[in-house]
Length: 109
Image (cartoon, rainbow, N blue to C red; front, side, top):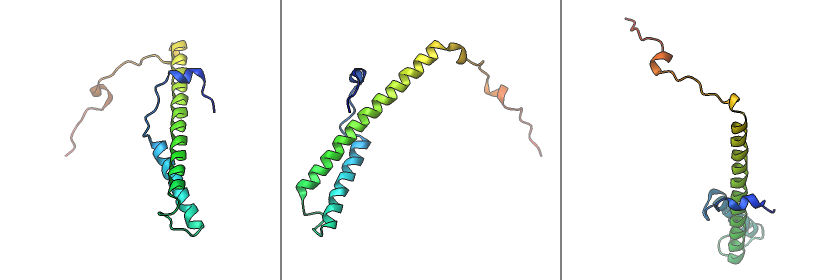
């Protein structure tokens, strides 16, 4: 997947983000499941495959977050442009005080 040139202006996401951590954990669980299916010790066997699965999941999570940030930035830009071009749809309402909104309080005994 290739990002557009305008995505290069965005700051990069942090190395530790929720998608990277989550997909890294899913990769590790996949390696554990592979060991269990092949009747090997789940934690001790294939440490190199475990590290590879975690790093692949981390990589996909990082680029998923990068794509997510680009998508939300693009949507925000389009929304701001719409608001700028159509100010008549976004007029400010008159401000009321809290006392004008609520009814007067009369205690009932």
